[in-house]
Length: 116
Image 1 (cartoon, one colour):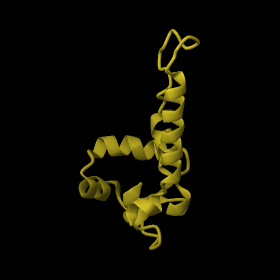
Image 2 (cartoon, helix red, strand yellow):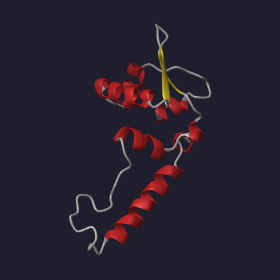
Image 3 (cartoon, helix red, strand yellow):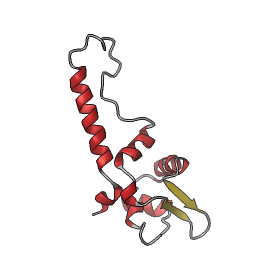
């Protein structure tokens, strides 16, 4: 996503092979990731010889939190994972604060801020 964000202003379409090579991400894994991002409408594919992928929205309108939520299929959850004692748990308020802080941080980071 960050690599695509670098070329948003130029309206450049980037091949999966190029992203894989430049970012050091295994091609097959990247294909699965980009497929998930395409399903949710964050990226689109252009078919053909000059084909590739591009961001649908401006980098300043896409947050790290949004990307993480899509790729993890949920938000990262730190609060009382699998805990059988949720009602009696003395630390649940601590984990709630940590979770809220993590969510706020991820939602405050835009792709544009990551390419600067």
